[in-house]
Length: 347
Ligand code: HEC
Ligand code: HEC
View 1 (tube, helix red, strand yellow):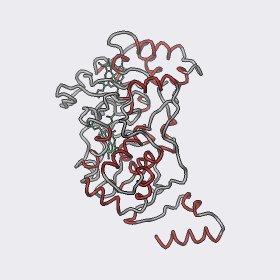
View 2 (cartoon, rainbow, N blue to C red):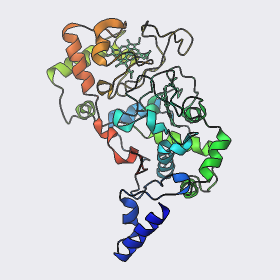
View 3 (cartoon, helix red, strand yellow):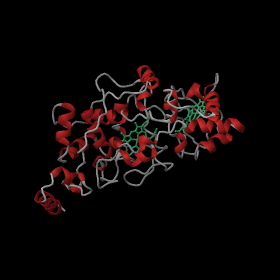
View 4 (cartoon, rainbow, N blue to C red):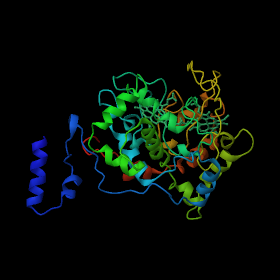
């Protein structure tokens, strides 16, 4: 394979094409251990995104970005490579992106996801949308990670998910030719430490914020809701105990873990042993399947069917709420190249 790619570069040179065009194509450059190098020929911007006002206002109140880890373009770029690199798992088979798939709003359609040896996770994978807006910064359905920086190292060390130790991880990455320069650009020196790995992964995950849904265009006065969507928004926001009291706009993430009262057969104590769970953002929820912490609810239609208190809604209100939830869909996040897999041979 190495000879093949050298031959390809040679041909490109002969044809007077730049080497960049060679790395830009579908043929991966093969490096150590059969891993391909990431294609980073396009430099993307992650820092200082200009959000519409309704989002910027919410971010000002709820942003969990720590002062020592603001998003930088070089840091999030390194984070993107780490996120999609299967070398982060014991047997090079699983990356973060295997269970948090971009095309599925950074979650999985499987009820439980498969780890590096085929074992199943305990809960359903969470959609990594607007994670930055969870004010307390605590991560997982049960909030067991105190910060996102702490969380991102946990799947790597999880026995089911990726099966590595941190010393193993640092040693592994040091053998891969593309990392020293990425760490250099992100942190000013090429040293590869698990602390830096955590910082970069957290920057990438924090940068995934959908803000181009119909809902967002309506809030900016660029479009209008249909009558049904408008009624749905009203029902969503109406009074005490409303959907919005637990899933506040504009990101629709719970502000605290709550108890959606008795999902069938979960046997899972959640955040406090009493069945309280965090809910991820309801953005793109209408497109997702396997909802709730155990993935037991097929989709929003099944949810509204009334099995879960506070979530069962009937009659016309159901159609209106469904129409409203659909306005929260932003598919651009599922195809945006800056969040895509940079390893060209591992789609
Ligand atoms: C084998 C599948 C799998 C892999 C690999 C995996 N995750 Fe997850 N992820 C999950 C599951 C399942 C949950 C929910 C677990 C729970 O709450 O107990 C989760 C939860 C999360 C959360 C919490 C989100 C929130 O809103 O609280 C973040 C962040 C996250 N993962 C990031 C990552 C990163 C970064 C990687 C790679 C280093 C990764 N995951 C690898 C399955 C996976
Ligand atoms: C008492 C607080 C509370 C109220 C009221 C509430 N929710 Fe929830 N919701 C939650 C919690 C907590 C979860 C996650 C629970 C779990 O997984 O066990 C959740 C989960 C969801 C999910 C699945 C999210 C996912 O990604 O799996 C949707 C969709 C949802 N709620 C919509 C609604 C709608 C629509 C309403 C109003 C009809 C509503 N909720 C009312 C707290 C609430």
